[in-house]
Length: 139
Image (cartoon, rainbow, N blue to C red; front, side):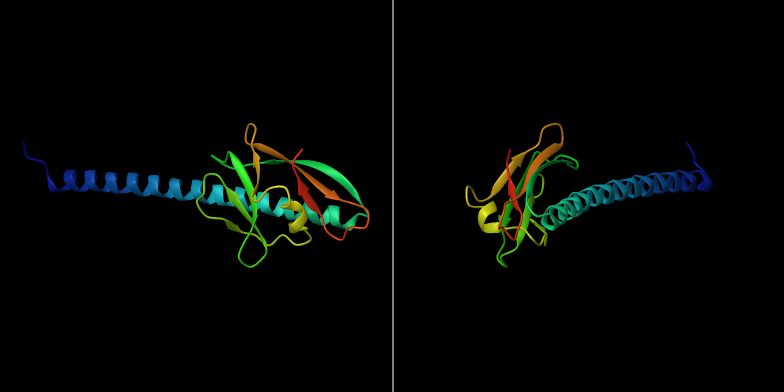
C-alpha cells in the first residue's frame, strides 16, 4: 500500500495536535490543584486574622480540600514558622500564617494532623481571654 506524503503528514499533524491538547489539559488541571491549595491557605490566614481581631472566642470552620488530600498537618519549620503538610505531597507548603500561637497549637502533638471527611476538614480557631495569638485545635 502506498500512502501519499500528504496523508502521512496529516496523520502526524493529528497526533501532534492530540498530544499538545492532552498536555495542555493536564497543565490546566495541575494549575487548578495548585490554586485550591493556595485558596485553603489564604482562607485559613483570613479566618485566623478575623479571630485575632476579636477579643476572645472560639470558632469551628470547615475548609474544602483539593484533590487527593486525606490529611492536613501543621508543624513548626526550621525558621520557626507554621508549615502545612498535605498527605498527597511529600514536602511542606511554605506558609507564613501570622498570629498563631505555635507553642500552644503544637503542645499536645507535633505535627498536629486533621483527617478529612469527604474532602473537608474542620478546625477550631481559639483566642482565649488575655491571649495575644490564635490557637488551632482539633474538635
